[in-house]
Length: 182
Ligand SMILES: [Zn+2]
Ligand SMILES: [Zn+2]
Image 1: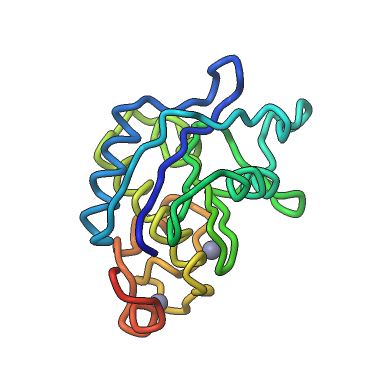
Image 2 (image 1 turned 60 degrees about the vertical axis):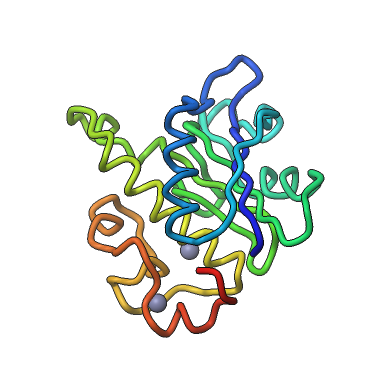
């Protein structure tokens, strides 16, 4: 992975588009942890085509396909970031999804916010969770599968509590199986 390009994802109405400040903070953190160039695209991706009116959620898999169609420099990974709630048909929701050994991934801040669980907003916790989800999905794009070490960012997590106990990094075994630059 030579570089990371963050793509804001939302509805054409503007709903679900993350604030630029949040995207910038994620870009800074991701660039620092992964020692890679990180750029925020100004051209957002409209998610209306994948929006399910009944579930009020966006199916993440077609988003990955749309991201993959975008022009990108060689070795670049495209990471969509959204406030919209994501799902895949067999699951109630997903925090994110990625193509295994592919160039596209997407993460959602929707269920990473303390406000979603009725608590006051906690901006540092949100950025930390987003960073961990980003590392997790990027790990999949680099060919990593789920890890049994619960501290490793590649362990599977379906609750924010499980995300919080993961470290923002890969265990030794996972780190060894991804190409350099992480
Ligand atoms: Zn995963
Ligand atoms: Zn691991």
